[in-house]
Length: 246
Image 1: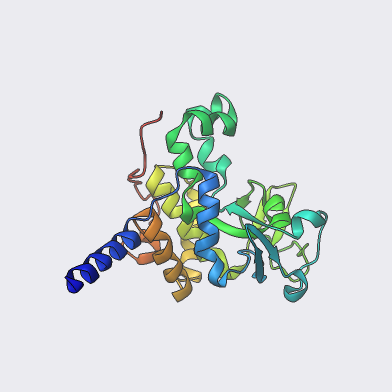
Image 2: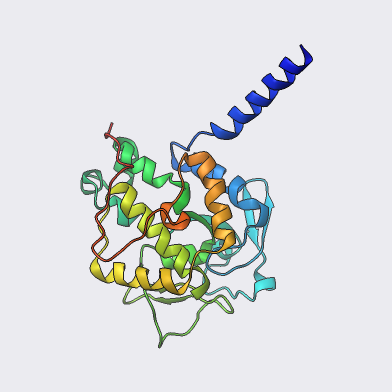
């Protein structure tokens, strides 16, 4: 009987590990993302250490040489950034044309799934998240850094954001994943840029580990991190994550 009880407990433990539920909305996703990233999290774009106080993340700005550009309150907090902005995946939905993000959250279950997708969420310094806005990623060789030692650049007129070289491959693989799963359009120029970044900044052990932790909640991995899929120019997206709108 003792063996049976122990075996039953083991089965329950396995079930609890492998049946973690995917988030159904952005608020749930943010709570889960903190648990997934918190063990060794640093801010995504600036690599600043994060101290957690409950749900609140506080970046160590002095420790990473960050300088506030304009917005001190947002610079001193961590926000959950959509690497592929909600505007990018939202404006391709009819719900966005009929009322923007609020309408999509209210009426479109596919949008809610995209907004809550844990692979597309990273902890970012709030000011950088705000400065990035929904700008496209690119390279700004003639621009200067505006946030101290944080290696990002922003061209507000052209609406272009240059991320640190250390996360460019991560960004590319997130974009590939989102486009493939939700059948989203990437321009030829975007594809060329991200293919180059994917090659220049290959998958790291840390990225693979994060991929594994997220997959326990999402029920699948990012195949562009695990190597199951490879993006090529003109890649035909599968749309395997599309759901019927409700």
